Length: 348
Length: 289
Image 1 (tube, each protein chain N blue to C red):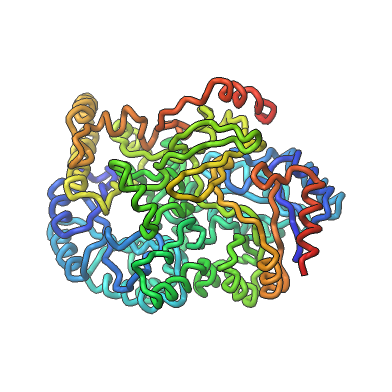
Image 2 (cartoon, each protein chain N blue to C red; image 1 turned 90 degrees about the vertical axis):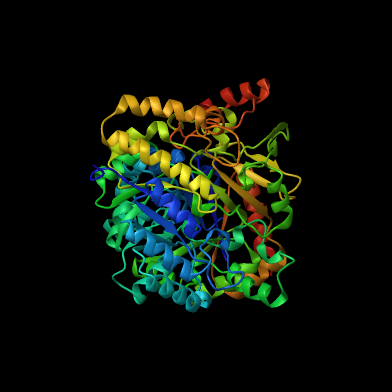
């Protein structure tokens, strides 16, 4: 039944989480192991990783016993010669645990992996920011069997890429949908204490792009108010699942390695159930279930807010129109009027 | 040091070609909805040739929707002599194999530099001196400082690359120059983050990228957050931080690199919107010895 359906990828940070998401119906897992290099978290912290290689081994064994594949996110968007030795050792240790593939996001890292084990299956990370079929095919020629697309694409664009490319395509469906192009965003860092404090003050969010900013027009220095202007965070795409399946993508990915196990399990269970309904062509039941989930599913435990409140009412939909604004701020009307008419000349 | 002026619309470009700069760049670096029409590209190319300026065409990341437009433009550019194509998309690098006349110039969106992060993690007080020193060694490098990544692009015919004005990184830029890469360094604006869900468009209530009236050609916004204590500049879909090149840094990078291209961009953040201001900046930069 699941033959032609996209595979469902779930994030994992603990062995217990792996057990839960496999029970919930994940086809594939992705995770990482804390690297034995102190303070080299150039981009993301080590908090979202399995603690040890032994934990990875147990996770892989459990997953394989249940017919589930395990991918390691070796997707640092940056390689440097001085960390190559440690990096190689890390990859070797991961490969020893019998993992199924590596997710790679940098050509330097790719070269290291090819040297260690030319045959290991590879997935091209979203850090390659693939937004067209030429990129997907280019990565395929380099040896990637599957390409994970950048988040900021529309369903018709995804469909075209799948049609035009020889590569297997994977897309994001749920969890933290970044406001910005992942690999070009340098806002996210753990190590700046005032930032950490500011982020702690924002309930339910972790990223600097969700902060409020005082906005002024550079030309006339006019203050336009305060708004979380950089916040284009998306979260959910259950309503769009049939259209996504229709595109022919090979994988649907849930984001949230750093989230609670309850989130990882809950999201996997919901998407599994909905995908199975689509596979069985029970579209009316699918629609009824989606409507039910919006009111009754609490997607971000331990928060007591349902899907409608977390996502729908704020427009935090992965596949909403690109310029849809999730934040609620009205520009003062004179400013609005000015911007609407002043730039019409540039329309051509 | 050769100064090249970058402009993303014809109004600015016409000012740029009249200035004292060595070369001119045309095109949209970050937003595919601002890719110029072919006609406008032809005009820009002609203006540059008439003015005797070296011409580069700058391109952003490209989605499937706009890929066909790029092919059309590359067909045209490939017939011209010595045009540099600044690419920020791997798909474009792949397509460039069919356009042997174009000089392949790696754009800065494909060069990862951890130090673009506005809050340097090495300031973390919990970290000891030695660790800080070790992290700094990596933090200020670029992805091209990995010999493997460098080799990857070299094998694909890349001869030039864009970088940012981050003085702590200059020593690492020097090793790229020594390895034979031609470097173009953007003065003033360092990109901090960029999106396809355009922050400016959403703020102004524009609904459809295809009907975008391109307010960012003339307007930029200053973003302040008290806690973060850093000013950001929003120009279209990209957030920048701004740094004025200081005389000592100009001297240092000249000493380190010997030959390089300095890119100055015409827009509302740099306030370089007419020839006079560009010329004044070039004179000031050249006077630094």
